[in-house]
Image (cartoon, rainbow, N blue to C red):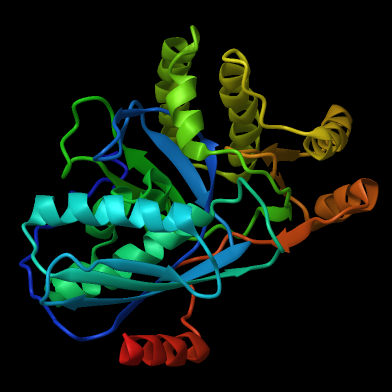
Length: 350
């Protein structure tokens, strides 16, 4: 990676507490190309092998953050939603972060998720939230130069979500992690700045499956260690060959089958009839030579990807159900003024 100019170690930054100020951040969701499941260290979110992801714009997350001088009153609120899972993750990550960086005071997050769909499982929302929250937090707690260092921010995002680490470094990103890697050594870096040769549509499917449960279940598979070794090889293949569109599409499809095969070996099937119908249409198109594929993460939702827009159109016509047009975005989403106004009203009351 150093020879290709891809590797850069994260910087080290001074803490500069800006008490009582509101700081903002935003983030996009991801889909796994070289997927991961299973943590070596669950508290620090150190995974058992590296992974590669692609950012999408099927949703956006916005975060407003403030630190106060009092202790023991941390809060995390998702605007307009009852989100106990996000709140629980936030509280756990906050405690770990404070211990690692020796920070006192209370953390307050006000969050909004903007979706192109009504509801779904497996479209990377937690990554978007973690990316947004980490950007707002770093802006408030560290010297200003830290906000320019996506590798450093990805370390902070990782404490909430491994996938969030990759979202920060997108649009095509590699998460460097493995057993016994240190906190500072497990971060994400960018592999490609712009991706305009891949077309996407998302089939959103609701489900109550727990990602945390999938992490804990998959390591019990008799095939987990073999899959881990294959993932190292797959990561090297993308790095060495540049991550062009055909490689991204083929790796996402192959890796979907690999990860879910390992999960199925434990008795856990995340797909439903809608998932299988979407997969079947894509496979029919692939059999006649179309460059189209899919990515399915820890849920039944399907992200269809192709190298031509007309192939996405053909899939949508054949599927004849909800499939939301999407793309691979660069950078972070713009933060709408309506969110800033809502955040200011929230913090004024609390």
